[in-house]
Length: 113
Length: 117
Image (cartoon, rainbow over all chains, first blue to last red; front, side, top):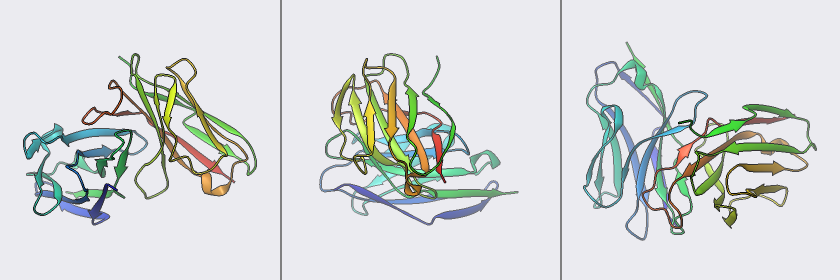
């Protein structure tokens, strides 16, 4: 079964510093991978998705992620953190049936001045 | 263009009560999903509709959970005889894609926070 593991439930960075949120996947077939962001009391918003086209995927708000098959990873990065990036981030993988997403447990990003 | 809306946003129920949670998807979206998000966890899939057909209900945790989408638009998630372990945020999502949806974006509503006392 397809699943993802997010390393680090909490990540703290300084404003202007590199953001790196880690996600490793487990899949017996080529996966479709997603990163979502969730702000307090709001629904999830898609940041970016990998669907076997380019391995480096650019998303909204300056985020990008690189699919590395050899490492079974899909880490999310942003060169320079903004205060507004503070939120919960979820990595997700599509399941065989195509009807659902399996989400990781999430990483809470804190941005300090 | 409105997004996915859910009501109520907050619901408090006494143990044993029945509750009904409503989801209004984006107009014209064929696919509709329900997820359950426990505190500090990622969302977990409950059920999937393609139009009015419930094609996957493998994630429903017990027979106390029931979902419907009778006209292929608005959906209702009903929980009978609520238990404390049912306390969670219930998220609804819709997508324009039909069938196996690989790569199609799911648009999420703000969720309904259910607290069972």
